[in-house]
Image 1 (spheres, one colour):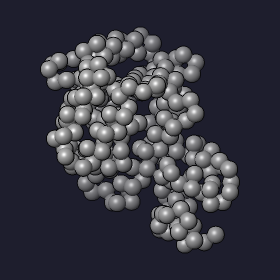
Image 2 (cartoon, helix red, strand yellow; image 1 turned 90 degrees about the vertical axis):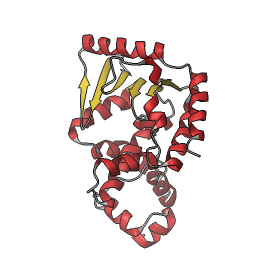
Image 3 (cartoon, one colour; image 1 turned 30 degrees about the horizontal axis):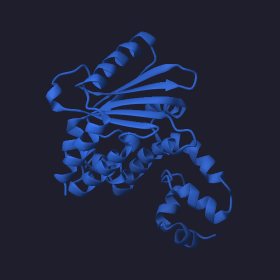
Image 4 (cartoon, helix red, strand yellow; image 1 turned 45 degrees about the vertical axis):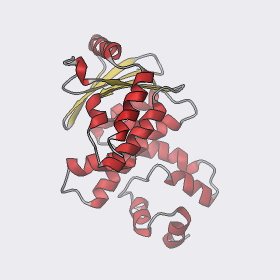
Length: 244
């Protein structure tokens, strides 16, 4: 099949498909399923994508991605909406401001890489995901009002489900142990516990059990101070009105 005909079938531009074909770009998350449908290949491209999506992350982040893929429970805290539930518009705005000199193609590739992580939550047996989000992440209009309203609407849907919980940490709580960064805690399929801490432009995977326990203690304290899921839903919905 020519790229022109394939572009019509999967609704992606010929140039975009050409860059994917030559491994200049990572495929966007919805493309493998479309390719399987067009070519009648079952889940062949979907299986390949599950492997390939790890390759787009820099080496220093790759081990974190491998751990995330094995996680049965993920606990997140941060001053932004967690990457696993970010919308495309939200992601694009973050990458654009983070590197104003990046070309549109470079931004597209970073966005695809970030969104590829979200296939984890669409698996047959997804991990349990618990998110504590600083109030700043709810108030700051990343990408503008329309983008932020959409992002918050997604968060509201995830506040209290069978596999996801969202809690807001309000400003009124004041200082806390994680105020200068973000934290991800993961319980893996062999019951190993690891932590990942991130600041501006760097991240650190922590596997030392004692250090991981200390971070777990900090996270548990934040959970105690955060709003309940029902109050969080009401809080986010009220915040959405400011972006209407």
